[in-house]
Image 1 (cartoon, rainbow, N blue to C red):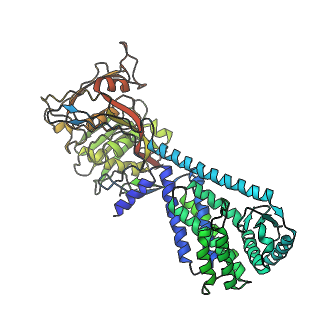
Image 2 (cartoon, rainbow, N blue to C red):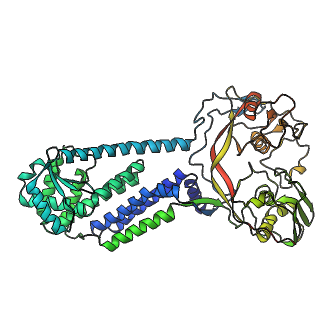
Image 3 (cartoon, helix red, strand yellow):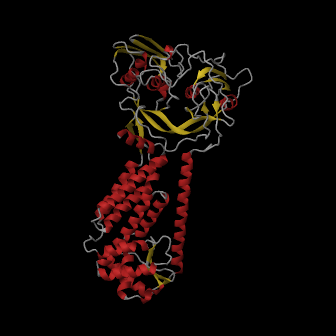
Length: 619
């Protein structure tokens, strides 16, 4: 269960959009829970709690973009439950299948999400919805402007408002207007607040008019129009989220209840309840402005609250508002930058438990040798039963060997070398020769993997962690017209790079050897593989000089073994341009020669992040 929870957290941190969505859900839930827990407190307290949660929701996307991420490692390993990607990479709808004899049957292929990441589509839909609700809010503001522009000043009402405003401690001037199209009293404005009353307010009884004005003045005193507009902006941003709308509806109700409490402090509850019932009749069938704070659907709840003598009433004190504001700011600053990332159970990524120790380690800096290629699993290595030597290698190469190729204690080519982040420049330029003598006789995979990890930690002060997040991947699918893959003809043992024996590839009897170009430095590359499955071919393709900057994932649906012959032009800058006519690019060659297509997309990628690395003391 813990693994599933960790997986869900990693899923929600797979992209910035998913991270914001997960945090918004948590914040909205906490806001609604806080309102429920304070149900016996005055309405003003619940309103303050919900206002704080909506303020956090509004600030969350901005803070998540501006504040530098703080990554939290969650235990993860390749044997644990892993969630699917929240925003899967684009796939081709073609689903070829291989028959027992190696022949291929391909269903009709249609493109889906071709050239567009689903996460980008989802983000576009999010932005479009936000724009729609923002336009509705702008329309509502235009309605308010029209009410104020065409409202008629009411001198007698202004005298009443001026006196009641002084009693409420309001120092600002509050304008009083009459408007024939307004069915009920309303308050608008931040800098210049105004109370707009129906045209027949001149005929209301004195007590009814006084109660209505006291209610609206409490909105002015509490700056409810400001908080109301900000809450509507939050709803526009999270227009698809039901919990955010639920928080807003409760927020608006508690604002009305808070103003009702101000009326009850100087009026009889029964008389005010009857006035609210009359207000419901006025609103029935009437059209209210788009940004009106009061809602007809809330009137029954307000009447019940007014008549409930057991309810706590009163204003929220300044200390509570200050605490709510401080908590909201703390949540924004601490929660916004958080990112959950995958990390192994041990402190060292990829390490195994109870590994042998080194008896002696010698480290010397060398300056006169070339760096061995990273892709060569035996690059710069020499070993005997209890000794291991790394000859003139960069620390970057050592990290790749320790945490990628031999991370689990045996040779295993990862789909693509994990990019190393925060690596000091000297770690990719200075080279070191390391000779080490081990306790006992561990196999070479243990010495080049977990034991090398321990050596780097002890002598280079290395602190490193794994992160899994969205990055560039390449998706191999069947091209239009279907694959052109000759079936495996036998005569050798097919290569299965995804399931390498623990003892290594050398133990395989009569393996199908991969033959390549006769000119090693030539950019014209020829690959001939007599027997291999497509998962292994995708892995081999990413590890060649084809120029891919991410893993290649097999999405063809094909099973079985095939004969692969591929001629393509590499864009590897280390290779020299060919003397012969150049081969086609890898993408064109795959489609023409193999009937396979490779498209760039987005998917989960593993990264190695260096938190600390120091130059060693030579000995």
